[in-house]
Length: 147
Image 1 (cartoon, one colour):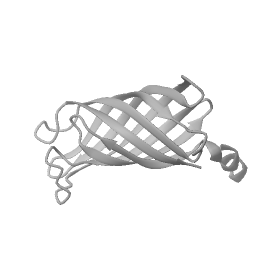
Image 2 (cartoon, rainbow, N blue to C red):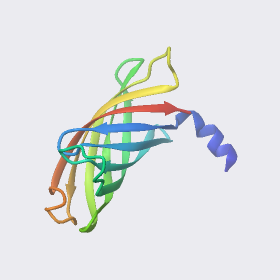
Image 3 (cartoon, rainbow, N blue to C red):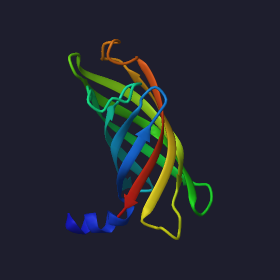
Image 4 (cartoon, rainbow, N blue to C red):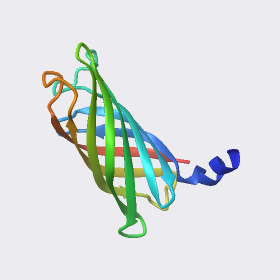
């Protein structure tokens, strides 16, 4: 197992994903390679439209399978389907289906950093509407350390 992890180590990344749109928030983001594609896992919170850090009442874990491809030698695209499990204080647990697509930059002069811009539309089908809308989308900026 250690050899498998070491062989895959150059294809992992961890960092932050900052969102906008109808889902203002921040996520701790982890990516790991699955062959030529990858899996992204994001643990985050929705700060709402008032960006109140003292009232964190919505948490979630999203997982997205991403197909990847090159655009140039330093710019690439990614897109894929995903799911999200969430918890809303005083309302309970929820589940959503999602999609995600965007572009990422990997610069030769700073090979340990990855920058991305993406959009993730989601459809929540188990949470009450007074906690979050049924349909959400979030544009986001990601900054990750590659290891």
